[in-house]
Length: 140
Length: 136
Image 1 (tube, each protein chain N blue to C red):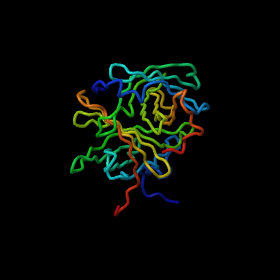
Image 2 (image 1 turned 90 degrees about the vertical axis):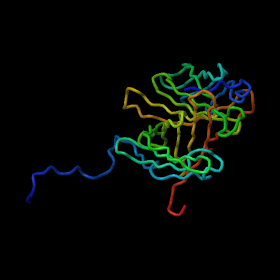
Image 3 (image 1 turned 60 degrees about the vertical axis):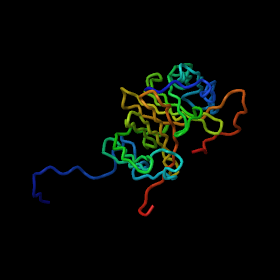
Image 4 (image 1 turned 180 degrees about the horizontal axis):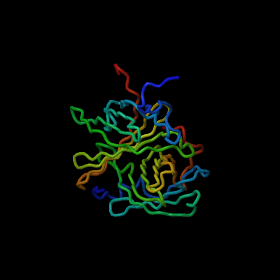
């Protein structure tokens, strides 16, 4: 056997380290099933794996248009007794004087998302929505 | 967090005592919710290792249905339960109070962050005859 280089070998590709829970159930593009007609919550979510953490990008609905809420880090959660699999995340947005907490969990192929929006000016009530998301596919 | 005071009448559907009908579950066993200057004060009793008999009070922001001016249908509470940072997303669901409980240990990464869902009924009213785990 010969070697042609003294360069360090690249890190081996392989499965996710066992001490890191599997986040794959949450990853991808998700579309609100009602397209914003009822729920008033986000229209679309994109969940990406940054290697050490998850990020969430949300597209929100506003009258007559959509709006990119931007990308924020997400805190992930496992189910009790199942620390190897992530099934839930929370993410916080601060937009236009409101703080919105997204709380999501994955079940039977659906992402269920609760959005709690709390205005910081104290002049409007906080609002709550619960929406269901399915995976985005081209042509959807 | 800041939100305008909510009329106690608009909190009526959320206030009172709520009990987890899953008696075998650990975690939050019961919640007593009462109006507190337009918000909700949650008195939370937990079961589980190291938590049996403990009771903690958290302030919660009442939430109405988006786009509506009706009564509060949910709440958001953030704070510490025992040693855990906790986010509670509660909402009324077919006569039950459902709470999505998110916990994380702020200092010990060996403790996995956990989310569980629990369903609570009002004692004295008709108790659900079977678990509602099938509910999304």
